[in-house]
Image (cartoon, rainbow, N blue to C red):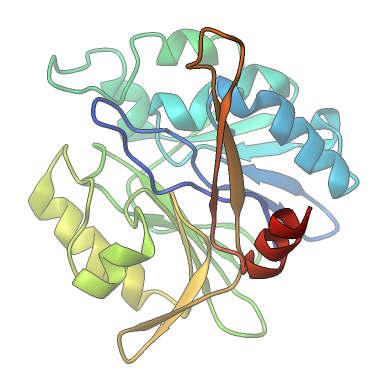
Length: 253
């Protein structure tokens, strides 16, 4: 099973909100074309463009694996009404009666899934495709599930928000396990023990050896703030790439 990173998650928070850009992944084995999570509405065009860059249209995605029903992981699900939608049963049942303190699961979650071809996944490890098994990782939400994908280089752990960013792995403590912190702690340990390459929910894929993180991808986000009344915008960039050459070129120009 080949795993491609479509959109890298952004581990960023503002004073009053999370940016909510989660990692979106494409899994293919020549038989199935599987999307791991479908992201918030704000990345809808970017998702379609990222699929196209890999030679895939939304209509060619035959399976969507939804790790959990938080808003930033499901809002583009309507693009895939033709597909089989895999959802943890605990998540689906819980979404009918969301506790008041839950700021992640939207009240419209089940509405978005209405009429779709759902397969509800039980709360246990099981092989759902050859070389691909589910991994229950509750704590961030009531019934989050990730995937473990067997690859030549070792097992790939698609952990979603049970492993929010690489910092969780280094600190040994989950950053956003708000639903049940104790279960979140156990799930982080389970995810890190399940393989050797990690795909976090809001960060780039990485390996971890002797407490040192080695990233396998980079990202760059350009931000524009329309603060000035005279029409000027303020531009800034968040990047993990080496931009020293670009900065030198900009200075010379």
